[in-house]
Image 1 (cartoon, protein in one colour):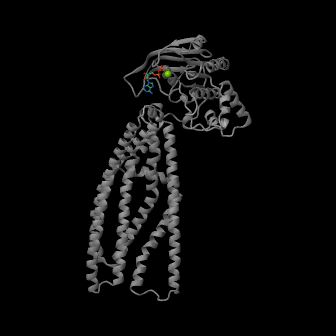
Image 2 (cartoon, helix red, strand yellow):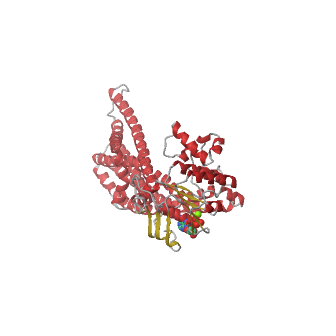
Image 3 (cartoon, rainbow, N blue to C red):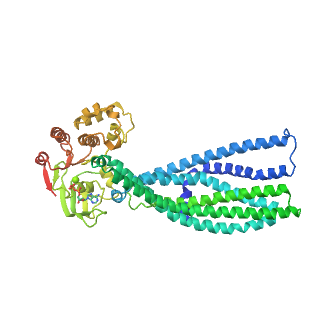
Amino acid sequence: MSILEHSQRLKLLLPFKNEVAVALVIMFLTAAAQLLIPKLVNFYVDGHAPSSLLDPFHFFVIVSIIIFSIFSALRFYLFECLGLKVVTDFRLRLHDALLFKNTSYYDSNNVAELASRINSDTQILQDILTTSAALAIRSAVVFFGCILMMFTLSTIMSVVLLICIPIFIVATNLLSKKIESLSEAEQLALAKTNKVAFDNLNCHMLIKLYNWFTSNQKRYQKINLQYVTCAKKTLHAITFFQGFFNFLIFSSLIVMLMLGTHLIQQNALSVGELTSYALYLGMAFTSLNSLSGFWADWSHCLGATNYLFDLLNNNDNSEVRGDPQKVSFGDIKLDNVSFYYPSNPERKVFENLSLTIRRGEKTVLTGPSGNGKSTLAKLLLGYYLPTDGTITIDGHSLNKENIASYRSIIAYVEQEPMLFSSTIIENLLPDVTIPLAGEQMQKVVEACKKANAHEFIQQLPNGYDTEISDRGNQLSGGQKQRIAIARALLQEPELVILDEFTSALDKENQQHIEQAMDHLLAGKTVLTISHKESQIDNADRLVLL
Ligand code: ADP
Ligand code: MG
């Protein structure tokens, strides 16, 4: 556990320092009030309190209790709110960092696992940084307050008890180290369960088709078992510690009672003082217990959130941020481009590939499946950078810094269109506030008409406002492609990349859209990836990969 690990997590509170300060002040007040309770008991047991219920002293006590209760509730509320804010803020930062990760990052990381981490790993932080931390600070205050009070009551007994403390600290330290390492494995196992669940639910139709229920249930069961094994190891460590702690509490209580009764016989202590001493001792131990519980949780949190902080702090595999700039468009040249996917360096997809896509022409890229046609599109879009060689647009070399600007003039209709699980209109124009102004809506309808999508969209239950669940599952492949085409048209691009864009369309729709596209994209630079003769015949230039 390095100081950095602790400070990284505590820094999450920094944007909310005012709220933290208010919550802490209230917490100190409630802790101080709690420390006065045994003193009050001492007062009553030794017979110093007024005998009449209507005495102003009792009135004062009742008012104090009411204030104490209000403050306690307020403290709870403030810390819970703080937790929500801190974790939401952190989650947003994680989400943002993940969106900016390179495409290759997603080749080697599972999306369902990452989603699990954004949720369950951050949840741990929420609990620990707020309510648990608040209780721990209060416990620390109460603990030291109790020790102080105990010394004022009886020095001898307190010195004897203090011997227990070093034993306790050493044990806590050992335990927390163990827990931190166990927790990292535990969170990984938890994320993996999410991955399998996501996988199974996503493929539910396949599972039904081949009756793979049992095997897939077993797969999920197995991964859960791994998680339970990991979680149990942490639990064992904590349980052992709890047992040891209880032993420590009860044995010291017995020692204290023996010593206390001896002191009473010697007239060195009153019964009220011993009672109040026992209450302080109980409170001190409860506080110490919650402190050690907090430390165990904190260690758990350190281990469990290591992954998240690595993810946030490592920008090497992220896209460059910044708004797109205006760029000039012209011929696209690939010069001796070699490329392999970072996740599979063994297989070179291209070796010294050179070709030119001329401005204003329709270039058709064709060739056997698996030859790298889609990969070429991804290189032009800067999802991956060439391993060797250069790609230039109008003489400017594509690189990490300028790729976002070039993307803004490219539209891409991919083989399997990606759709958000939101309304049709949000899929067409995600960055525009809904509802659209009349003029904008007209544009959308026009684009959809051109893409032959308007008709089927209108037949959906809520037209353009129909929610398409689970990334368009209830739409046909052809319908999804037509939405993607309309979306591309709305971007008013310079370069249009169409990757087998009619693969899921029937002949009639295909012809209709091809004709419409020819008309629409006349004069634009178009790169079509296709096997279809009709498209090949129409090409200005044909490239065989
Ligand atoms: P095409 O579109 O011509 O059918 P692709 O460009 O999709 O072919 O794929 C070219 C090669 O790159 C294939 O061997 C494929 O397995 C591999 N490939 C595609 N995507 C990835 C990826 N994300 N990571 C690793 N290899 C990939
Ligand atoms: Mg392809």
